Image (cartoon, rainbow, N blue to C red; front, side, top):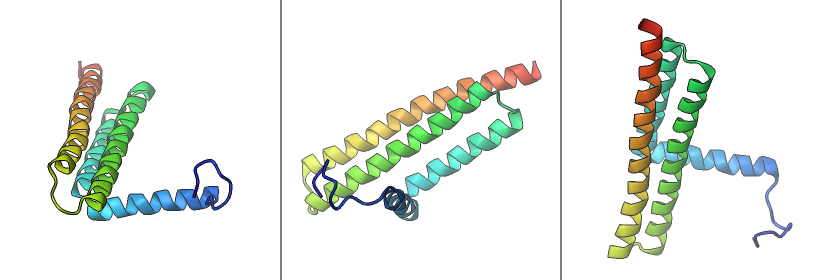
Length: 127
């Protein structure tokens, strides 16, 4: 399929199907996706318990979505690197490590955002 050409492009509906297929595959095969989904579910549960305001919900949901998207991109990068370099190569290892580091850094900053949002909610609710 040539980018920009109209021939051989899947329908809009099929495109969503491919995306869901990719998400299901990542959830089935990647431990970190499962961990991040559990972390997101915990954040949503805490938001419900603390009755977050609309802006706080937006921040929490956006943060969860960004981390999940980053982990999906990391998984895609690792999959492509494994495809083009099935045997170990230092550059392939560096590419995978850097992609994982990007998710790690993002996750740290999202954790700090979560601490700020939930600390603010706790202070406003109980003090």
